Length: 227
Ligand code: CTP
Ligand code: CA
Image 1 (cartoon, helix red, strand yellow):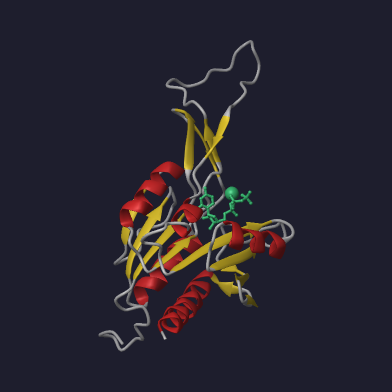
Image 2 (cartoon, rainbow, N blue to C red):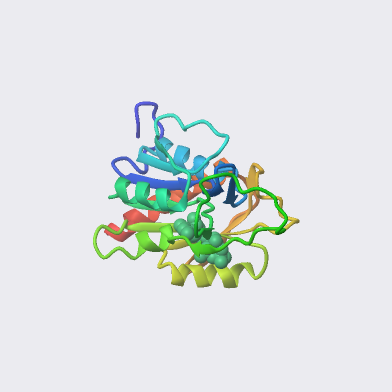
């Protein structure tokens, strides 16, 4: 336990977390982004720190303060996020909570694109690197536990199961972000943890509670793996 007598279930462990959206510029005043408040990712970084871990948080633009005691790296784009994540490795646990933009503009206009007689411009897109899959598939220095999220609006478990395999994760945290769920931007989250061994549904919880339960789960898995 730590100096406050709290359990330090992740003492001595390095935890790396991504959070928030990424912003992919189109021109100097416009960007492509996902909806993400960063609340769940930041809560995870705080909970990891409270569990005694050495924590690095790589975050896109959010309206949240840097968590106390957490090394926080600010990025804008997916490619910057990948670079910052790779620079922060090695880690024992990697948790990808960021809502990374899947595509970026093929070309970034150096000047503001103006409305004109030609109508709406068309935007050529290229795919961004998959940060989670890149970390999970490292041949050397792969974190012992790699955790991803699957925010879905339909076929939640099918899509989450597919991501677990495609991204070589140890855990996928599935959450329903359909219109009725109200998860995005809110303070609560109802998740199901999926592993190769099976799945475990948690009740509707505060995002801080999801984060602290996750730390207990991960500490147990790390210790289990060592035995
Ligand atoms: N992720 C990532 N890098 C990306 C895209 C996603 O690290 N370029 C991570 C997210 O942080 C999340 C997980 O992958 O932990 C799943 O993200 P999601 O957007 O649901 O998966 P995609 O593979 O992008 O599939 P989809 O077509 O459903 O968007
Ligand atoms: Ca995506």
